[in-house]
Image (tube, rainbow, N blue to C red; front, side, top):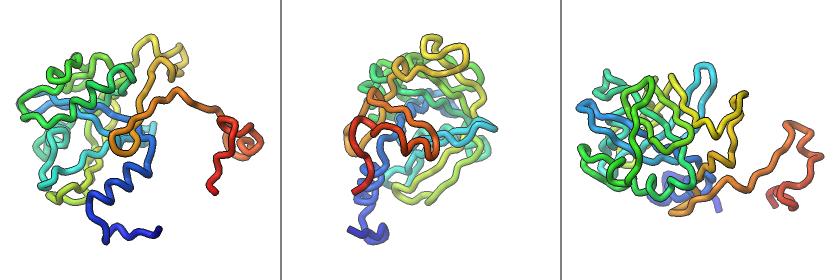
Length: 224
């Protein structure tokens, strides 16, 4: 099957993205509006960018009518009318139902924290609050918003943020800043409404040494 995106409907392109790019870590992004209203929303188009400076990105899409969603409206730079700050909160298994509920379309002045019964606690270095139950939180200042289609329905936006402060729960890190995956218990997004855990993991040496390692999970994983 060979597919040209230009010949597909927007919904079909989206299905290929979310079904083919898996699993995707979930960022519960908290922001605050210029008038002080807190907001929380889950995003699975999210990644680290680099460590010097420490940078992350997430990608809020435009609404079906081409308008900005609350998260983007809040976190875009002050020069564009936003507050220029956001927090990426890592989502654990115990939080997933409530974080997914925070995707409910609410009026801009209604808090998703309250709607989904999630804790809201002050951040250390930025104005948006942190998700109190999250084991790892990256407090960010927005560096840039890259728009793939301004005012275009369902177009993507890349929000680049410099991490200016990190919260790590004591129980998930050791003295060398190695984070314990079992204790974080992160959740990933698959296609459609499906999610996955990170409980099934494997360790491999880098480079050519990986070719001599035992087959992951006891079976071949190459494409056939």
